[in-house]
Length: 470
Image (cartoon, rainbow, N blue to C red):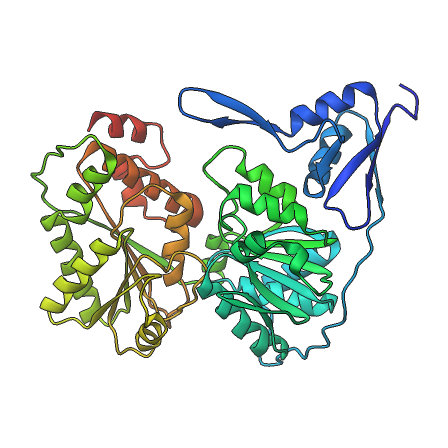
C-alpha cells in the first residue's frame, strides 16, 4: 500500500457527536463495520446490531480510540480532523478550600483533562462526584451533568453549590431551570428533547454511566449532545448484556482511568469489608414455573428466610451498626419492617414511592433510625453512615451487588464494613448467590473472604459444577 491508501481520515463536524470517514482503503470500511457490530441475544435467536452507519460512513466519536488502536496494529494510520469548537461560558466558581483532592482523585482529573473524553472508573465511596466537579472547575466552562434518579438530581445540585460555590440549574422532577452548571435527568431530556436546552454547554458529564436508564436511551442522548468534552463516572463500568458496553463507549469514550476498590482499602480510603453468609432452614419446594410467583414464594414470603434476615439485622443493630437491608420488592420491604418493629427495632422502609423519604433519610443519618429497608439505595445515593448491608433481595446482577454494598464501605474509625448475603438452597437461587459472590471477589480481590472461596469454589470452574448439582 502507498501512503495515501495506508491512511484513514475521519472528520468530526462542528456540533456533531459522530465522525465521518473521508477516505480509507476499500477494505477498511468493512473492517470498521465488523469492529463496531455485536450480536444481541433475543432468546431463540441472535440479531446483529451495529453502531456504525454504513450509508453515512459515520461512527460515534467515543469509539475513535478503539478504531485507532485496531488499525494501528494493522499498520494503518488514522487521522482525525476535529472541526468542533468548545462553546459555553465561564463558570467562575470558587473551589471549596476545605475539600482536598486525594492523590488518586488528582490522577483521575489529570487523565480526564488530557484525554478530553472517556470514563473514570472509581469505586463506590471514592468521591466520584468530587472528581467530576474538579474536572468542571479546571475546565471552567458551562457544564451539563446527566443523572437518572431524583435522588441523584438533588444530591448533585447540593454538591455543585457546596463544592463550586455556584447555584446549579435543575432539569427534571417538574423543573426546567438552566444555569452555567446544570444537573439534568436523562428521562426529562429525552422526553422533552435536548433542543429545548437554551444554554450552550462545553462539557457533558454522565454520572453512573454504566446504568443511566438503559443503554439504548443512554446512547440516544449521547449522540444528540455535541459537546467536545464528554466524561462518564462509574463505579461499575460493565454491563451484563452484550453490546451495551460499546454503546456506552460510543457515547462517551473508553475507560481512561480506573482504580480498584482493593487499592483504596489498602490505602485506608475505604473500609475493609467483612463478609458473612446467612443460612436458614428451608423445607419449601417451589410450585410455580413462573419466576414472579417463584420469587414471591421462595424469597419475599419465605418465613424462615425473613426471620433469619430480621434476626441478623437485630444483632447488628445491637452492636451499634447502622444497617441497610436491600430488597427488590416493596411488599418484601414492608414485611421486613413490620417484623423488625415487632422486635423493638426502630426501622423504616424507603422506596421511590415513599412520600417522606427525605425525612426518613435524614432521621437515618442522625441515628434516629437503626435499620433502613429499601429498594432505592442501589446507585449514587450517598449515606456514609451505613456500616452494614444485608442483601435480602437475591438476584444475580453484578452491577447492583457492587453498587449496593459499596454504600457501607466508607471508613468507620477502624471498624470493618459488614456485608451479609443470604444463601438459598434452591438450585436457581443458589446460582444467583454464586454470581453475587463472584462479583464481590472480582471487585474486592484479596479482601474477599478466602474461606468462602474455598467453600463455594468461587473463582474456580468447580463452582459451576456445584451450582448444577444442587
